[in-house]
Length: 141
Figure (cartoon, helix red, strand yellow):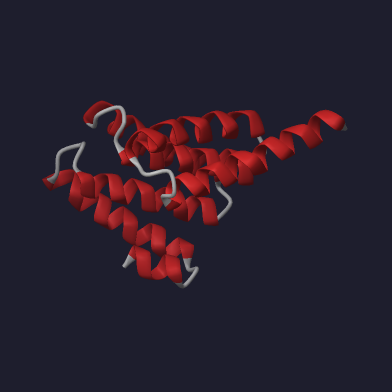
């Protein structure tokens, strides 16, 4: 239900439902279960949509930390977490240097495990170009 409300842009209701799901998950799932990670990610995107950047970053970092602790270092889900955090730093926080760092970490993993024309590589390279331009513009002002 949280996802349905999120799609309807009813974020407060989405959070209420996500909290209900999370409470149930905590009772029956391990702290590193993939369903719990998915709920953390939904919290992050909901808080991001609400422009509550600190909360979004907190949940994206929870996802990343669990993935780093439970998955191989070059797993695509870790690359996704790096990309999500990079996006947040780029689009909502405006810390382009941190965004670039996260995008580069994501790209390094993607290049190890994916073909060069994969959409994740192309997307991350585009993100890097955009943030690099922003850094250049910032240094020229």
